Image (cartoon, rainbow, N blue to C red; front, side, top):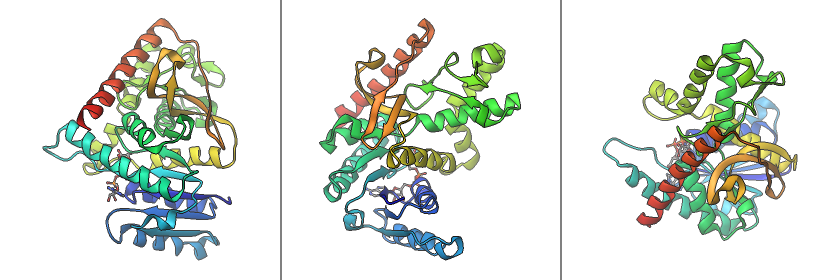
Length: 310
Ligand code: APR
């Protein structure tokens, strides 16, 4: 595809995303990291897979944003993970500063690019990126819901012995354990989950989805998930690059939708060449509305904590 994508942060999520984009025939990928040599080395390694795969695509890595010039899409994965002894606020402040810096530098080089934020805590980081970007709200958004829905679909598929292709699951809300899987608006072969799966079993699947990130961290001990996150990023990049108008769960800026104002939050959104082109609104049950409001409160609390730190 004749699009240039820049990935900021060449750690696990960023480098795997760059590899997937290269292998999906994006004509140019730029990989940036603050740590000298990391992006350069990983990009060169990916480039050298080209002859084996029969791909003439180009990927380059650097600490210098010059290589990102004229990107169509910027994917922000740079950040640090919480370390022992570090408070949530310490982490929030560090990642807030990283996201601000990389948003500004990326957009200086590519003023017309759309921005997909991936760094956690996702909803707050999307808000921060938007604030410093000077862009329209539809041009800055986050990846979380595609991953959360993919995890939910995986668990449903395993428990019901059904192809992932026959399952369409929908998860709304903040990225974290307050997310709201929509049981009347998620389907197996066209039949809603609440009609298809017994309540107890469904509750277990929902709980496992809510803790899907932590389950992987517990296995890995150091580091967090990156294969499914990078696949999820690429699905969003594909929808935008091909102007497909696909509806994907997206962390988008809400201005009254679902009764929520001035907050980045996970909702179904139509993605195309202009970024978030429409936010799809479902009729929710009273219980779902209540859960969504709780999730919005948790996200807003993080945003307020972040604002107090700046
Ligand atoms: N500019 C550019 N790169 C930076 C900066 C910066 N200011 N600060 C940190 N980085 C880089 C680090 O050097 C590191 O290579 O960001 C990279 C982060 O990589 P990992 O630590 O491997 O983290 P990863 O698993 O890729 O996750 C990245 O995505 O899913 C989220 O929670 C996850 O916030 C995390 C992000």
